[in-house]
Image (cartoon, rainbow, N blue to C red; front, side):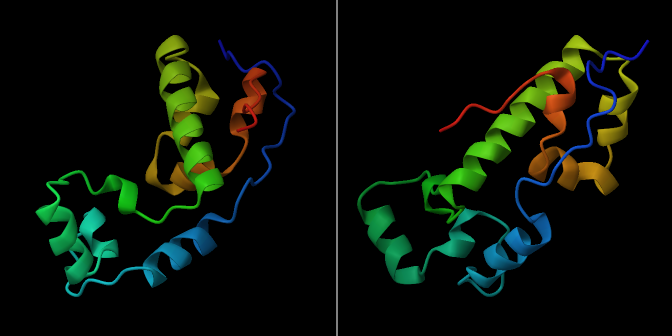
Length: 119
């Protein structure tokens, strides 16, 4: 049984995920990459943060505020809905690498009658 409330809703892109990835790639200052938050922090700034005792560098990842809010919202909703409706075919279809960008950058959750809160 499919749990989708609005089967006819066609998800709309909230932001351009490919462009977002390019923009984030352009902000990397570390070579070679570490694939961690410090990729976005210069050596000088990193030394300053470490001197201040700051060890959580996630706040220094330069994700635009509105995109970060959408990413967090979409992933949390996807996890909750997947647990609530483990047999839902649409949710299952999103659970693969090819559709990863849909979970992150589209308003697919509206199929379930959920609107993203305005931040």
